[in-house]
Amino acid sequence: MRTFTDEELAGLVACSKQVVDPPRREMRLDGKMKRNDMTLESEDGKHAFRVFMRQSEEFPENFSVGLMYFPGEDPGSFQLVRCNGQHGGEKVHPHHALFHIHRSKADDINAGILEPRNIEQTNAYASFREALSHFCAMIQLERPDDYFPGLSQARLFPGDEVQL
Amino acid sequence: MNAVEILREQFNSHVAVREKRPGVLQLVAPLFHEDGDMMDIFLDAPENGADGLANPTQKLRVSDHGLTLMRLSYTFEIDTPNKEKIFHRILAENGVTEENGELFIDAVPASLYTSLLQFSQAVSKVCNMRYFKREVLASLFEEMLAGFIQEQLPRFRPSEKVLPIPDRDDLEVDWEFRPNGVPLYLFAVKDANRARLATISCLEFQRHSLKFKSIAVHEDVDKLGRKDRNRLTNACDKQFTSLEEFKQSALSYLEREVA
Image (cartoon, rainbow over the protein chains, first blue to last red):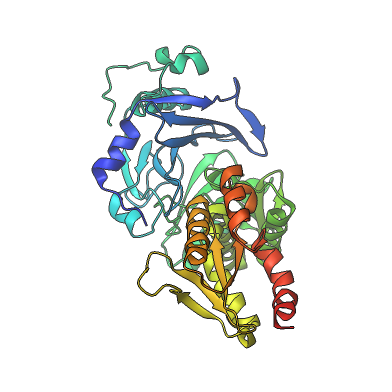
């Protein structure tokens, strides 16, 4: 089984990516959620990714934008990073609904735990649109405005650092 | 005591609620997903509000407001009849109802605690459907094949991991059978690399003038490219296009080899 280092995982998040299968212009309603997806590959064509975008129809503050990685061998696909909105809480801040980012750690992946268990609170966004903008910058998506018109203007406070 | 106070007592005070929307209370309880997120569980207050909460016979709705299927959809889609069947079986076994993507269970205040745990268990099982991803199941291919061979084909004397040319440990055969005097080598082919190794092995065995027959069992023959498939077809005596196909035909095939 292939093993990873945290540096490799960070490199996979930060490498420049282009769209292979574009997202829909609009999120589509599926049950109680709105959803969109797109397929990406690294600029050098060596790595395959999928981005999922989800937002609760009833609770718009509850959303997720995540990056899946497909290594093409064991341990199979896993989430590299996921930007979450405000849902009920998490283990680090169980009593507070905070915007937060999940990241996978190499030790977890190498141990077969394919869940992004590392959680950090973030002030980088406060809405789905801002989160998507932050996310696209974080994963180095090429020409995001082609797929999400006006996205680069979505962040009201663009001085916030993008953490790679 | 109203329903929330009863729940707090049942939960040994390890629970809190906060208003998500008017009439919708979000549960803050030590019930977590594997990635550390708290489970999204809500109590929908009855339409008669505080009066309803205080009524011991008034049913309350424990719901996820569609957030379980939203979470599952990050990595897994319920998009085939079989997946639908498993999904609905999980719900039925846990007494949970689904409507338009929302999971819920109705409970009276006295049984709210057990209903919540039952509901959280159903949420957990639904989220665990992600383990049915094709790539996860594919990694079980060799184990499932081994299980079938050991259980159903012992009379053909199967041996695992055989080296027909002893000094060539790079040409290992997954399984050997002895239905008659001639060894029958089985290659488990789950991807293009394994298809190429099976092809090379068969050609090398022929080059060394070994007496043998060969079969390839594919995890999914359609996953192979045309060139890999053609090379293997030319080198190998018999192929089964899938594990299911092998399971259905292996016994009669080996019996014919015995005859």
